[in-house]
Image (cartoon, rainbow, N blue to C red; front, side):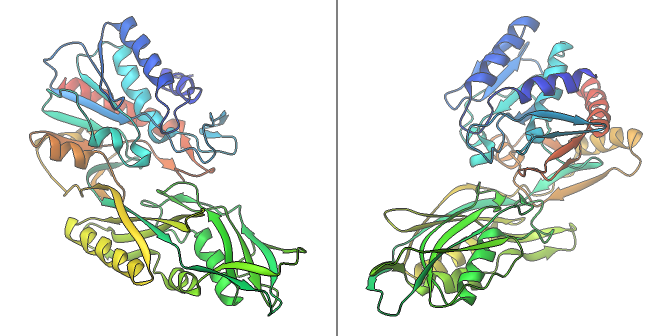
Length: 428
């Protein structure tokens, strides 16, 4: 088995769910010690490994992964050319990038190697980076399509709302309680997969509630704010048997008879049912989604129904407009709203570094091209923090990231590593 795959297999066995840092930090301390690298760690658990302060090239990958089940460790499964996990995300995003960097360290390249923390929950490490970067060029290894050299990405913002409009009523109209749930949907990344017509579990369950003229007592669903929701469950009150709008929806009658019911106002169902989820605009020039928003999570607490949205745009002005529009709509139905996790768009930038990366790539793949993607890359933050940096992003083909169907091709992984090696030799 090739060295890259062996390293990646080792990484899969570490606890790398967002918010967990110790396993990977200890692993990198050991690698650094064995191969003669200084290992710097800042207060947000970002890691910078270097041999000297004279590097011309910094490699960058985030080391956390999306875990659909809290604190899980994926099971490495190889099936021919495919690596996948057993009923969870694999963590090839961005474990493959980390494996590339560790392999280069094992070959003693005098470059900077930056491993950032908690990218999957709001680019926290990159936003709070407190480590010295001396290089002039950065190669990010978090792209997910072989043949593409990414030179631009969408900006994003997470919007959080709490709906508190509820009341307790006497059950004089003989409402019956039902548990309505949906699962086993495809899921996917709310950026790069947003245009693939992947069903949104929250939208489907809300549509079922709307069509059934039902009342919400409790609703919970969605996995991560940057994932298209797969699993959703609600307790509802309805005079008639609910109407399922999708084959995956399961409806079970609850035999308990209630004299009083605490129900949420219909305005939340009306809003979420009519909410325009998914692709909002397309950029023909870049051949990529321009604007999108994903209804990602919903949860009933003692305070009300908490709802999370992830908005993205290739233009910062559009992103701000989308944020303000969504906030106003939510406030109009009496939600308490705030936003967080905002990061800028990375405007496409063609320069001597990106041109050289493309030229090298074309030696291995004549169809390679410069592209922009509708997902957040830490590159946008680094460009803002270090304006002198010339940045490009590449990576192997990773299919269905952030979902239980995630997999990566071994051949693609090895192909891209050969390109990474040539770029390293050119710019080290």
